Image (cartoon, rainbow, N blue to C red):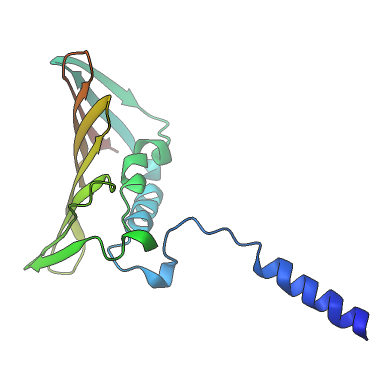
Length: 177
């Protein structure tokens, strides 16, 4: 009997310790808009779409069309911008005015500084705006990101690396059926 209790205790202990914690809230604990969940549903919705991109680097432009789109890769910056992390729960101020919800932080350790969601009358997302900033001794970057479910997305990056000229990168991506 003692062996059975001991084995049961060991199984219980090892199974309860096996779940890894990545600092994000669980589905039911989302304090802020579930950006990861929303983008995951967009990946499913966009599965039959291709993407037309215009990429500008310091004014020089290139256009490409991608038919077999790796949506997880294309939309990775949105997944990276999700603010539903336990450590950040108290770091964002939330304001709501009509159909606009805005999350902002001044915490220099959090790269996402602002997220703004514009919704229609039914609560569906119309537009999403994100501002991200990263800075260290060698590098400063500001990213302005927008997403429109009916159109596509835009990423504008202003980057300054020490001992080099500032660089501006602009990506405009349109969803194509």
